[in-house]
Amino acid sequence: MFKKLRWHIILIELGAFLFITVLIVAAINIGFTTQINRNAHQLLSMLEKYGGIIPKVVDSSSENGEDNTQIKIISDNDSATDDEKIQHFDSDFSDLGFGLRFSDETRYTTRYFWVLLDDNNIIIDEDLSHIAAQSVYDVQNYVHAAVKSSSLESHSGKYYYLKVPEEDKTRIYFVDCYSMIESRNSLTRTSIFIASIAMIIATAFVWITSKQVIAPLQKNLELQKRFITDASHELKTPLAAIQVNADVLELTMGENPTIDKIKRQVNNMSGLVEEMLTLSRMDSEAERKEEFSEIDFSSLVEEKVSDFMTRAESQDKKLILNIKPGIKVIGNAKGLERLVSVLCDNAVKYCSSGGEIDVCLDSTLSYAKLEVANTSEKLSQDDMKHLFDRFYRTDSSRSKETGGYGIGLSIAKTVVDQHRGKISAANREDKVCFTVKLPIKRQIKKYEKSN
Image 1 (cartoon, one colour):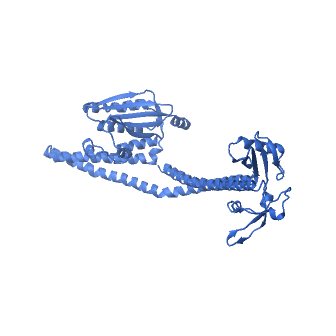
Image 2 (spheres, rainbow, N blue to C red; image 1 turned 60 degrees about the vertical axis):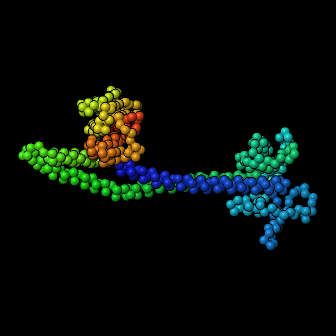
Image 3 (cartoon, rainbow, N blue to C red; image 1 turned 180 degrees about the horizontal axis):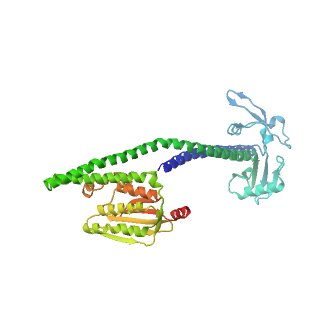
């Protein structure tokens, strides 16, 4: 149990750490991608506004809180005067995203080009003067990808583009974002590497500290087990003395209702003590490590169920068997016998008068499936959650009539857990059904390996 609890703690803590790490890494990379898109959009918008060139900043001043930054349009074929070349700079273009600002260096560090296409998507004009490493073939590929795309603004490889319709023509502006894309990819690789190292360190840390976390719980449970065992043994002596004295009184005074009540309560207490001792022994590590052996589970179930035939018939209850022969598992014979006995005893005890008890055993390639169902009123969802809790009984008034200590199903669950199986309960029409699944393939391999 503590091994499983330790793994749960490790998985929960590492899961939380991984979730937060993934969020941080994703936020950083999404932020960087957003910056690339913002940068490309601003530059493309600038190219569209200023005729396919990135302008030169010649003056920057502020009067009365207003932005009066001016730019100079640079063009080899520009015949305008110097005054006509001076225009007011649109401040909306100055923010390139995440603190980056447009400056005079931007036009030297940015690689870009544009092409003009006719209505047949044939290049009729172009400006490739601001790129050097791209061939005409590369440019044609970028243009072809942009033409095929239905988006007016998107990217193809390392170039972002903006398509601007002009009457029966289309002008496409391209901006090189290679350096930013590579920076983002490098950041992604670096962040993943750092996150992986952090995950390894966190795993080692959690592995070490998890043992210290469960140590107090383990100690408390061991003390509780010891108390139950010691108390059970201590109770045996006075119960035996009471039983003997009650027998002596009965021999002396004859049959007496009071003596009968004393003997009945002693028997109940003795049964409870035995159940508590059984549960305590099953929880101990010594019994958990007991060597398993190959068992004919079909024969075991058939033999144990037959013990309840007479009891069921005496209570006007019909017990129906449907057992597939030859099903074998690797397990503890005593534990599996107790499992079948607990489920059958529970079914007979709580089956409605005149009802049916179905015991079915089948198998698949991976597990043996045992079902024990009895006619009964449907159990509530709250009862379903607590059926396998120790000392839990669904109906105190019924428990007084049928007996039981609320430990049987806890013992059944402990046996199933020791065999790495699963046990569950469900309402099925007019019956309550308990289902046990015991793995076959894994346990047989484990058995063969140990031999």
